[in-house]
Image (cartoon, rainbow, N blue to C red; front, side, top):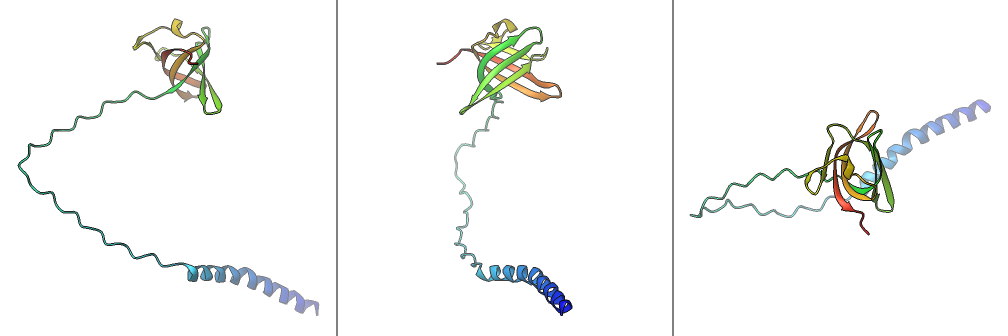
Length: 148
């Protein structure tokens, strides 16, 4: 008697596992709606020839300056050449500690500047990249005093 129940349970379980997913998939296919017929698209007419002046060549777009992140200088550590900037991102603040290298471009009022311009409280636009040992500043533009 135990042997019969064992086989009934085993076969029943196999049936449930094997057949139910198939029947659920087939039922889902029956319920799918056919897509609505597509509206007829108007064919584009070729442009008519006119005796207008030829179109002027389009100037290539000027290369834009990378946007960077605008924030406030918290500190500058001359010994390690590290600039710490707080960038507001909504309710959060991103704190960037970027190392200045020989290749870092520092600008103030559109002209080249020195690290002496990097004072706490100044607003800056900073572009940086992630390197193996931290962040490295690509460029720092001093925008002026802190807003607000």
